[in-house]
Image (cartoon, rainbow, N blue to C red; front, top):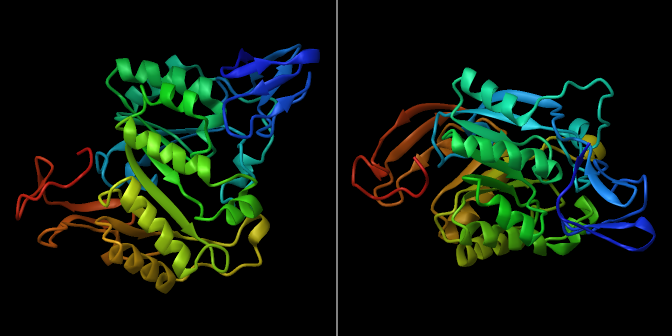
Length: 333
C-alpha cells in the first residue's frame, strides 16, 4: 500500500479524507465511501496504487473528446472503486467491484513503457473515477509529461479544489460527466451533489485544461426541457459557447434496468435546445447518427471533421482553422 495524499488526522486515530467533497471520516482499519482508501493505524493509504483493473487501447473519440488530437490512440487505464454510487452506472463492475486478490501490479514506469511500445500519444484515466486512484494517476501523469505524452481524465468532477489544481499541472484535457442539472437528481441518483461538479468545471476552465462535457440523458430522470435548457445556459455563461457538449444515450443497467433506453429523437431534441442557447459544438452519442457526430464550422457550416462512430473519415482543418473559410475551431488539434 502507498500512503495517500490529502487527508487530516483526527482524535482516536480517525482520519478525514480531503480528496473529494464527501470528506469521509474513516476509523482505523476501515475504508472511505470509495472503498479503496483505508485508514491504517491513523494514516490513510490507497489500495489501488499500481493496481489497474483494466488497460485498453482506445481511440480518443471514445472518451469522448472530439476537439483534442482527433484520431489519436489512448492508453486507457482504470482501477476498482468510485466516490459516487450512480444507480445508472454502466461500468458498475469496476466502480462497485472488489479488488481481485491476485491482481497484477503495474508501476507508473511500466505504464509509460507500455504506452510507447503501442505508439499511443495519450494516456487516459478512465472507466472508473480517476479521482480515487489519484496517487497512481498523478505519478503516471508526471512521467508522461516528461516524455511528451499527453494526459486526459474522464471524470465525474467530484474532487476538491486543492487536489484538482495540483492535478491540472499535468492534465491536458478532461471530459466531465455532468450527470444532471439539479441537486435533487444528484442526491437521489448519485449520492453526491451538483455544486462541486460545477466548481470543477470552472476550475478546469481557469487552469486552461481543454474540457468537454458529457450529459447522459436518462428518460424520466434528467430529460426535462427546462433542465437541459438551464444546463446549456450555465455552460454558455460560465465556460463559453465553444465548449463541446456530448448528449449520450442511456441503456438500462445496474439499478435502473426498469427504465427505457434513450431514443435518438430525445437526443436530437436536447441538441436543438443546446443550439438555441448558442452552443457551437454539440454532439450525440451511444446511438448511430452519422449527421450528428460530425464537427461543423460555426461560420460557414461546412463539415470540418466527419465521423462514423469512433472513426474519423475526413479532417478538413488547416492549422486549427476551417479549410473552407479560415474560421478558428476551438480545441487542441
